[in-house]
Length: 270
View 1 (spheres, one colour):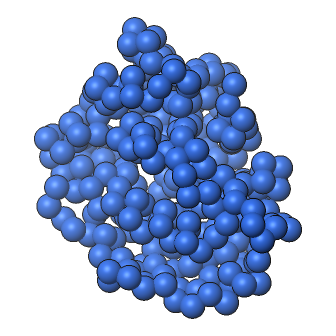
View 2: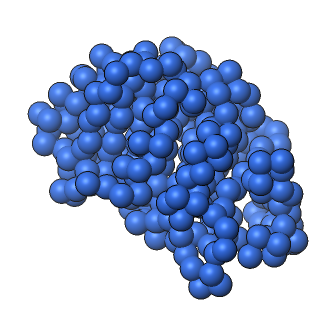
């Protein structure tokens, strides 16, 4: 399976070009992407467990980045997943998309090159499910992020409950109420567009659409403990099922020990 994937022909459709994969030093398959939804070349990186059977279809965890491109100011999510051997442990495909601009997982109201939500939904997901042994169903699509990408995981889950099964956020500004902080202004564009993504409103309008099982997970904090507590209180008030883990504070980083727990909750919800 892995050898075949490395020799796949270039994928091209609707002005999207995705290169054949090249395996890097960590054993991760890297594809370069040209898309009308992003202002520059991005990447889709894929980590697979070994010995995948020909008819096997695996759950897919979309590990959402905190930074633009492949910057590592807050650690390296790929390195953390590889070090923890989580693909093998959970028999899951891990996907690491990158974005040309600071990712907030929104579509800008007027700039066609900042359509992060559309890029993920219309480029990354279809490519993964056509190319890799990924389950092409809601139950097989899982979202993982922290900080702004934790916000993005919850935003995607709430806005597209038919596309994703669960979303885990760690140390995220879940109660952000206006664009501007943390580099969010240039991505959302204006207050009206931000309102479409504001999590406090999405849980009010869509939270009950998630059903009676917890599909929103938050697992501890570093910088945003108070925001997690406020979101937990709001979800309790609205009676939206969720998981809230108030772990001891950790460093705001991919490598501070929270990732393995979050993945465990995603793949084996209790």
